[in-house]
Image (cartoon, rainbow, N blue to C red):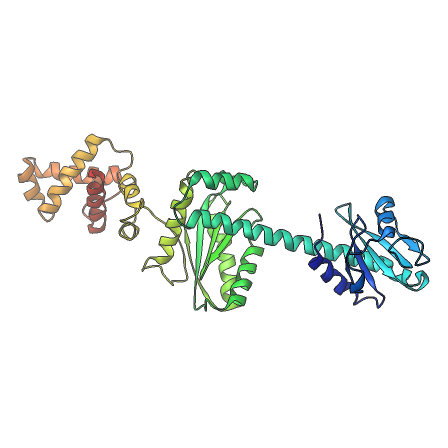
Length: 368
Protein backbone atom coordinates (compact mmCIF):
# COMPACT_ATOMS: atom_id res chain seq x y z
CA UNK A 1 0.00 0.00 0.00
CA UNK A 2 1.38 3.40 -0.99
CA UNK A 3 0.69 6.59 0.93
CA UNK A 4 -0.05 9.68 -1.14
CA UNK A 5 1.43 13.08 -0.30
CA UNK A 6 -1.99 14.37 0.70
CA UNK A 7 -2.42 11.49 3.13
CA UNK A 8 1.13 11.92 4.43
CA UNK A 9 0.53 15.66 4.95
CA UNK A 10 -2.55 14.86 7.03
CA UNK A 11 -0.58 12.37 9.14
CA UNK A 12 2.23 14.90 9.74
CA UNK A 13 -0.36 17.51 10.74
CA UNK A 14 -1.79 15.14 13.36
CA UNK A 15 1.63 14.06 14.64
CA UNK A 16 2.69 17.67 15.15
CA UNK A 17 -0.02 17.98 17.79
CA UNK A 18 2.05 15.60 19.95
CA UNK A 19 5.60 16.87 19.43
CA UNK A 20 7.14 20.21 18.47
CA UNK A 21 10.19 18.85 16.62
CA UNK A 22 10.25 18.51 12.84
CA UNK A 23 8.74 15.25 11.58
CA UNK A 24 9.35 13.53 8.25
CA UNK A 25 7.16 10.91 6.61
CA UNK A 26 9.41 8.81 4.39
CA UNK A 27 8.79 6.03 1.88
CA UNK A 28 10.67 2.69 2.25
CA UNK A 29 12.73 3.71 -0.80
CA UNK A 30 14.01 6.75 1.11
CA UNK A 31 12.01 9.60 -0.43
CA UNK A 32 10.64 12.16 2.03
CA UNK A 33 6.94 12.29 1.09
CA UNK A 34 5.90 14.91 3.62
CA UNK A 35 7.64 16.97 6.28
CA UNK A 36 6.92 19.73 8.74
CA UNK A 37 10.03 21.25 7.11
CA UNK A 38 8.71 21.76 3.57
CA UNK A 39 12.23 22.30 2.20
CA UNK A 40 12.99 18.60 2.74
CA UNK A 41 10.03 17.19 0.79
CA UNK A 42 11.29 15.10 -2.13
CA UNK A 43 14.80 14.69 -0.68
CA UNK A 44 16.51 11.32 -0.34
CA UNK A 45 16.94 9.99 3.22
CA UNK A 46 19.59 7.26 3.50
CA UNK A 47 18.73 6.56 7.14
CA UNK A 48 15.18 5.62 6.16
CA UNK A 49 16.53 3.08 3.67
CA UNK A 50 18.53 1.53 6.51
CA UNK A 51 15.37 1.29 8.63
CA UNK A 52 13.49 -0.29 5.71
CA UNK A 53 16.22 -2.92 5.39
CA UNK A 54 16.46 -3.78 9.10
CA UNK A 55 12.85 -2.98 10.08
CA UNK A 56 14.31 -1.60 13.31
CA UNK A 57 14.41 1.96 14.75
CA UNK A 58 17.54 3.93 13.92
CA UNK A 59 19.06 6.65 16.09
CA UNK A 60 21.21 9.10 14.11
CA UNK A 61 23.67 11.06 16.24
CA UNK A 62 25.03 13.44 13.59
CA UNK A 63 23.74 15.28 10.54
CA UNK A 64 26.62 13.70 8.61
CA UNK A 65 26.10 10.00 9.39
CA UNK A 66 23.66 9.30 6.52
CA UNK A 67 23.05 11.08 3.24
CA UNK A 68 20.10 13.47 3.47
CA UNK A 69 19.51 12.66 7.13
CA UNK A 70 19.68 14.78 10.25
CA UNK A 71 20.24 13.66 13.81
CA UNK A 72 17.18 12.19 15.45
CA UNK A 73 15.16 8.97 15.56
CA UNK A 74 13.76 7.12 12.55
CA UNK A 75 10.97 4.64 13.24
CA UNK A 76 9.47 1.87 11.09
CA UNK A 77 5.69 2.03 10.64
CA UNK A 78 3.75 -1.13 9.81
CA UNK A 79 0.29 -1.85 8.48
CA UNK A 80 -1.00 -5.40 8.41
CA UNK A 81 2.53 -6.58 9.32
CA UNK A 82 4.02 -4.87 6.26
CA UNK A 83 6.45 -1.96 6.45
CA UNK A 84 4.85 0.93 4.62
CA UNK A 85 6.69 4.02 5.85
CA UNK A 86 9.36 5.46 8.11
CA UNK A 87 8.68 8.36 10.45
CA UNK A 88 11.72 10.48 11.24
CA UNK A 89 11.83 12.87 14.21
CA UNK A 90 14.58 15.48 14.08
CA UNK A 91 16.37 16.40 17.31
CA UNK A 92 18.40 15.10 20.22
CA UNK A 93 17.60 11.42 20.77
CA UNK A 94 17.50 11.77 24.54
CA UNK A 95 14.83 14.45 24.34
CA UNK A 96 12.58 12.80 21.79
CA UNK A 97 12.89 9.06 22.47
CA UNK A 98 10.06 9.27 25.01
CA UNK A 99 7.69 10.15 22.15
CA UNK A 100 8.76 7.33 19.83
CA UNK A 101 6.16 4.71 20.83
CA UNK A 102 3.35 7.27 20.78
CA UNK A 103 4.43 8.52 17.35
CA UNK A 104 4.56 5.00 15.90
CA UNK A 105 1.16 4.04 17.32
CA UNK A 106 -0.42 7.27 16.14
CA UNK A 107 1.11 6.82 12.69
CA UNK A 108 -0.23 3.28 12.38
CA UNK A 109 -3.70 4.35 13.53
CA UNK A 110 -3.76 7.29 11.12
CA UNK A 111 -2.53 5.13 8.25
CA UNK A 112 -5.22 2.55 8.99
CA UNK A 113 -7.88 5.28 9.05
CA UNK A 114 -6.58 6.64 5.76
CA UNK A 115 -6.57 3.19 4.22
CA UNK A 116 -10.14 2.51 5.36
CA UNK A 117 -11.27 5.88 4.01
CA UNK A 118 -9.63 5.16 0.66
CA UNK A 119 -11.29 1.74 0.59
CA UNK A 120 -14.64 3.33 1.42
CA UNK A 121 -14.30 5.88 -1.37
CA UNK A 122 -13.20 3.15 -3.77
CA UNK A 123 -16.23 1.04 -2.86
CA UNK A 124 -18.56 4.02 -3.20
CA UNK A 125 -17.23 4.77 -6.67
CA UNK A 126 -17.68 1.13 -7.67
CA UNK A 127 -21.21 1.21 -6.26
CA UNK A 128 -21.95 4.32 -8.31
CA UNK A 129 -20.73 2.65 -11.50
CA UNK A 130 -22.77 -0.50 -10.83
CA UNK A 131 -25.92 1.48 -10.09
CA UNK A 132 -25.49 3.53 -13.26
CA UNK A 133 -25.11 0.36 -15.32
CA UNK A 134 -28.45 -0.84 -13.93
CA UNK A 135 -30.43 2.40 -13.89
CA UNK A 136 -29.02 4.65 -16.63
CA UNK A 137 -29.69 4.16 -20.32
CA UNK A 138 -30.18 0.76 -21.91
CA UNK A 139 -29.26 -2.07 -19.56
CA UNK A 140 -26.65 -4.45 -20.97
CA UNK A 141 -26.46 -7.66 -18.88
CA UNK A 142 -23.15 -8.71 -20.46
CA UNK A 143 -21.37 -5.45 -19.57
CA UNK A 144 -22.95 -5.56 -16.11
CA UNK A 145 -21.65 -9.10 -15.55
CA UNK A 146 -18.16 -8.16 -16.74
CA UNK A 147 -18.03 -5.22 -14.32
CA UNK A 148 -19.30 -7.30 -11.41
CA UNK A 149 -16.69 -10.00 -12.13
CA UNK A 150 -13.99 -7.34 -12.43
CA UNK A 151 -14.87 -6.11 -8.94
CA UNK A 152 -14.98 -9.62 -7.53
CA UNK A 153 -18.74 -9.47 -6.95
CA UNK A 154 -21.07 -12.42 -7.48
CA UNK A 155 -24.18 -11.10 -9.23
CA UNK A 156 -26.17 -14.20 -8.29
CA UNK A 157 -26.02 -13.40 -4.56
CA UNK A 158 -28.11 -10.21 -4.88
CA UNK A 159 -31.79 -10.85 -4.23
CA UNK A 160 -33.70 -7.55 -4.13
CA UNK A 161 -33.53 -3.98 -5.41
CA UNK A 162 -34.71 -1.40 -2.89
CA UNK A 163 -35.38 2.31 -3.34
CA UNK A 164 -35.88 4.65 -0.39
CA UNK A 165 -37.23 8.04 -1.40
CA UNK A 166 -37.15 11.00 0.95
CA UNK A 167 -39.83 13.63 1.31
CA UNK A 168 -39.56 16.76 3.46
CA UNK A 169 -36.04 16.84 2.06
CA UNK A 170 -34.05 19.62 0.38
CA UNK A 171 -32.11 18.00 -2.47
CA UNK A 172 -29.71 20.95 -2.46
CA UNK A 173 -28.62 20.08 1.07
CA UNK A 174 -25.59 17.99 0.14
CA UNK A 175 -24.35 17.78 3.72
CA UNK A 176 -27.62 16.25 4.91
CA UNK A 177 -27.66 13.86 1.95
CA UNK A 178 -24.14 12.73 2.83
CA UNK A 179 -25.07 12.18 6.48
CA UNK A 180 -28.09 10.08 5.53
CA UNK A 181 -25.96 8.09 3.07
CA UNK A 182 -23.38 7.45 5.81
CA UNK A 183 -26.09 6.36 8.24
CA UNK A 184 -27.51 3.85 5.77
CA UNK A 185 -24.05 2.64 4.76
CA UNK A 186 -23.08 1.90 8.37
CA UNK A 187 -26.18 -0.25 8.87
CA UNK A 188 -26.08 -2.49 5.81
CA UNK A 189 -23.94 -5.52 5.03
CA UNK A 190 -20.52 -4.82 3.55
CA UNK A 191 -21.50 -6.68 0.34
CA UNK A 192 -24.65 -4.61 -0.23
CA UNK A 193 -24.42 -2.08 -3.07
CA UNK A 194 -25.65 1.39 -2.14
CA UNK A 195 -26.19 4.31 -4.50
CA UNK A 196 -28.16 7.52 -4.65
CA UNK A 197 -29.83 9.82 -7.13
CA UNK A 198 -31.30 13.12 -5.93
CA UNK A 199 -33.82 12.23 -3.19
CA UNK A 200 -33.59 8.49 -3.78
CA UNK A 201 -31.24 6.02 -2.12
CA UNK A 202 -30.91 2.74 -4.01
CA UNK A 203 -29.80 -0.59 -2.61
CA UNK A 204 -28.96 -3.96 -4.09
CA UNK A 205 -29.34 -6.32 -1.16
CA UNK A 206 -27.85 -9.76 -0.65
CA UNK A 207 -30.51 -10.66 1.97
CA UNK A 208 -32.41 -13.60 0.51
CA UNK A 209 -35.57 -13.45 2.62
CA UNK A 210 -38.00 -10.60 1.94
CA UNK A 211 -39.28 -10.31 5.51
CA UNK A 212 -35.72 -10.18 6.86
CA UNK A 213 -34.85 -7.42 4.40
CA UNK A 214 -38.03 -5.51 5.23
CA UNK A 215 -37.39 -5.71 8.98
CA UNK A 216 -33.74 -4.74 8.58
CA UNK A 217 -34.54 -1.70 6.48
CA UNK A 218 -37.41 -0.74 8.77
CA UNK A 219 -34.79 -0.26 11.51
CA UNK A 220 -32.72 1.91 9.16
CA UNK A 221 -35.79 3.86 8.06
CA UNK A 222 -36.85 4.57 11.65
CA UNK A 223 -33.35 5.72 12.57
CA UNK A 224 -33.03 8.05 9.57
CA UNK A 225 -36.49 9.55 10.05
CA UNK A 226 -35.98 10.23 13.75
CA UNK A 227 -32.43 11.57 13.45
CA UNK A 228 -32.83 13.75 10.35
CA UNK A 229 -36.56 14.59 10.52
CA UNK A 230 -37.38 13.37 7.03
CA UNK A 231 -39.98 10.92 5.76
CA UNK A 232 -38.78 7.85 3.90
CA UNK A 233 -40.98 5.86 1.54
CA UNK A 234 -39.55 2.50 0.51
CA UNK A 235 -40.20 0.31 -2.51
CA UNK A 236 -38.81 -3.21 -2.82
CA UNK A 237 -38.72 -5.31 -5.96
CA UNK A 238 -39.69 -8.90 -6.34
CA UNK A 239 -36.79 -11.32 -6.09
CA UNK A 240 -34.19 -10.76 -8.80
CA UNK A 241 -34.21 -13.51 -11.40
CA UNK A 242 -30.99 -13.76 -13.42
CA UNK A 243 -28.92 -10.97 -14.96
CA UNK A 244 -31.83 -9.52 -16.92
CA UNK A 245 -33.75 -9.32 -13.68
CA UNK A 246 -31.59 -6.49 -12.29
CA UNK A 247 -33.08 -3.81 -14.52
CA UNK A 248 -36.58 -5.18 -14.05
CA UNK A 249 -36.07 -5.16 -10.27
CA UNK A 250 -34.94 -1.52 -10.40
CA UNK A 251 -38.05 -0.54 -12.40
CA UNK A 252 -40.27 -2.43 -9.97
CA UNK A 253 -38.83 -0.70 -6.90
CA UNK A 254 -39.01 2.67 -8.62
CA UNK A 255 -42.61 2.04 -9.63
CA UNK A 256 -43.54 1.35 -6.02
CA UNK A 257 -42.22 4.68 -4.72
CA UNK A 258 -43.73 6.58 -7.66
CA UNK A 259 -47.22 5.06 -7.64
CA UNK A 260 -49.86 7.50 -6.40
CA UNK A 261 -51.25 5.27 -3.65
CA UNK A 262 -47.80 4.82 -2.09
CA UNK A 263 -45.85 7.98 -2.97
CA UNK A 264 -44.78 9.95 0.12
CA UNK A 265 -46.66 7.46 2.30
CA UNK A 266 -43.70 6.79 4.58
CA UNK A 267 -44.33 3.05 4.30
CA UNK A 268 -42.40 0.03 3.04
CA UNK A 269 -44.10 -1.81 0.19
CA UNK A 270 -43.10 -4.56 -2.21
CA UNK A 271 -43.91 -4.65 -5.90
CA UNK A 272 -46.81 -6.98 -6.69
CA UNK A 273 -46.92 -7.91 -10.34
CA UNK A 274 -50.49 -9.18 -10.12
CA UNK A 275 -51.86 -5.93 -8.65
CA UNK A 276 -53.93 -3.72 -10.93
CA UNK A 277 -52.36 -0.51 -9.67
CA UNK A 278 -48.93 -1.70 -10.77
CA UNK A 279 -50.30 -2.98 -14.05
CA UNK A 280 -51.76 0.38 -15.01
CA UNK A 281 -48.57 2.09 -13.86
CA UNK A 282 -46.51 -0.10 -16.15
CA UNK A 283 -48.56 -0.67 -19.28
CA UNK A 284 -45.60 0.49 -21.34
CA UNK A 285 -43.20 -1.86 -19.58
CA UNK A 286 -42.41 -5.54 -19.35
CA UNK A 287 -44.58 -5.87 -16.25
CA UNK A 288 -47.81 -6.03 -18.29
CA UNK A 289 -46.58 -9.27 -19.87
CA UNK A 290 -45.89 -10.69 -16.43
CA UNK A 291 -49.36 -9.77 -15.13
CA UNK A 292 -51.18 -12.18 -17.40
CA UNK A 293 -48.78 -14.99 -16.54
CA UNK A 294 -49.32 -14.50 -12.81
CA UNK A 295 -53.12 -14.43 -12.91
CA UNK A 296 -53.38 -17.37 -15.31
CA UNK A 297 -50.46 -19.30 -13.86
CA UNK A 298 -50.45 -23.10 -14.35
CA UNK A 299 -53.49 -23.04 -16.65
CA UNK A 300 -53.56 -24.89 -19.95
CA UNK A 301 -54.60 -23.20 -23.19
CA UNK A 302 -57.85 -25.14 -23.09
CA UNK A 303 -58.60 -23.97 -19.55
CA UNK A 304 -57.76 -20.37 -20.45
CA UNK A 305 -60.08 -20.59 -23.45
CA UNK A 306 -62.90 -21.92 -21.27
CA UNK A 307 -62.37 -19.19 -18.66
CA UNK A 308 -62.23 -16.54 -21.38
CA UNK A 309 -65.57 -17.64 -22.80
CA UNK A 310 -67.40 -17.48 -19.49
CA UNK A 311 -65.77 -14.20 -18.39
CA UNK A 312 -66.46 -12.46 -21.70
CA UNK A 313 -70.12 -13.43 -21.53
CA UNK A 314 -70.41 -12.69 -17.81
CA UNK A 315 -69.20 -9.14 -18.44
CA UNK A 316 -71.22 -8.71 -21.62
CA UNK A 317 -74.41 -9.60 -19.74
CA UNK A 318 -73.63 -7.52 -16.64
CA UNK A 319 -73.26 -10.53 -14.39
CA UNK A 320 -76.68 -12.02 -15.19
CA UNK A 321 -76.49 -15.78 -14.71
CA UNK A 322 -79.68 -16.33 -16.70
CA UNK A 323 -78.46 -14.23 -19.64
CA UNK A 324 -75.11 -16.04 -19.73
CA UNK A 325 -76.92 -19.37 -19.55
CA UNK A 326 -79.05 -18.46 -22.56
CA UNK A 327 -76.12 -17.05 -24.56
CA UNK A 328 -74.00 -20.18 -24.09
CA UNK A 329 -76.91 -22.64 -24.25
CA UNK A 330 -76.01 -24.17 -20.90
CA UNK A 331 -77.90 -24.59 -17.66
CA UNK A 332 -77.59 -21.75 -15.17
CA UNK A 333 -76.19 -24.20 -12.61
CA UNK A 334 -73.40 -24.92 -15.09
CA UNK A 335 -72.66 -21.19 -15.23
CA UNK A 336 -72.48 -21.12 -11.42
CA UNK A 337 -70.21 -24.18 -11.46
CA UNK A 338 -67.84 -22.60 -14.00
CA UNK A 339 -67.62 -19.35 -12.02
CA UNK A 340 -66.79 -21.33 -8.88
CA UNK A 341 -64.23 -23.35 -10.84
CA UNK A 342 -62.50 -20.15 -12.01
CA UNK A 343 -62.16 -19.05 -8.40
CA UNK A 344 -60.72 -22.45 -7.45
CA UNK A 345 -58.26 -22.50 -10.35
CA UNK A 346 -56.99 -18.92 -10.19
CA UNK A 347 -57.74 -17.59 -6.72
CA UNK A 348 -59.68 -14.75 -8.37
CA UNK A 349 -63.42 -14.62 -7.70
CA UNK A 350 -65.26 -13.36 -10.81
CA UNK A 351 -68.22 -12.38 -8.61
CA UNK A 352 -66.00 -9.74 -6.99
CA UNK A 353 -65.58 -6.69 -9.23
CA UNK A 354 -61.87 -6.19 -8.53
CA UNK A 355 -61.08 -9.85 -9.24
CA UNK A 356 -63.29 -9.81 -12.32
CA UNK A 357 -61.33 -6.85 -13.72
CA UNK A 358 -58.05 -8.65 -13.03
CA UNK A 359 -59.25 -11.74 -14.86
CA UNK A 360 -60.54 -9.71 -17.80
CA UNK A 361 -57.30 -7.73 -18.23
CA UNK A 362 -55.15 -10.85 -17.85
CA UNK A 363 -57.17 -12.62 -20.53
CA UNK A 364 -56.96 -9.63 -22.86
CA UNK A 365 -53.20 -9.32 -22.38
CA UNK A 366 -52.81 -13.05 -22.89
CA UNK A 367 -54.43 -12.74 -26.31
CA UNK A 368 -51.74 -10.27 -27.37
